[in-house]
Image (tube, rainbow, N blue to C red; front, side):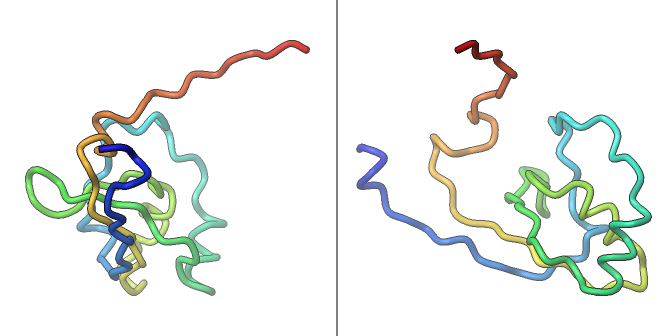
Length: 107
């Protein structure tokens, strides 16, 4: 079946406790950096961009995108954060996503 005619399954926004989300062990970011400014922003305005998650094989949800937001929103006083998860097809599962590598293009 071609990509164009696969059924579309829209993402669903749910509100999840960030401390319950499982960090992705394949996250290329080894250090999340300074989070004080992001934490202050989340305390003031909330998480504006939903985290992208997928159901985990061990239960719960695995973070695909938004590790810094997840960590910054893990403060106990903050409400659950928005997370987006949709139904994926076999070609779109995270384990089969291509790995991006930087390339230098010369003109």
